[in-house]
Length: 92
Ligand SMILES: [Zn+2]
Image (tube, rainbow, N blue to C red; front, side, top):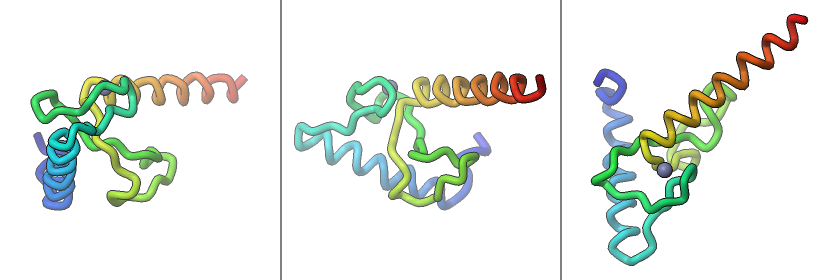
């Protein structure tokens, strides 16, 4: 998957994989920001950005959080739909 071939992204994933493992090992797992279920490396996950990049959110780990891949992608689709319907309203 081309999306994850950049070295910066790989380093960020390694960092968050470590955080997920460490949090789980002390009994305080990181929670998915969308469904509030604990993050686990066994479940596919992505790095989500607290502020979406399209809204000018800064890059960097302060703005990152791991989220289930399925939850993250469903949320992205919702944002896209909202934007499209807003744009349609403005035209009228
Ligand atoms: Zn989730």
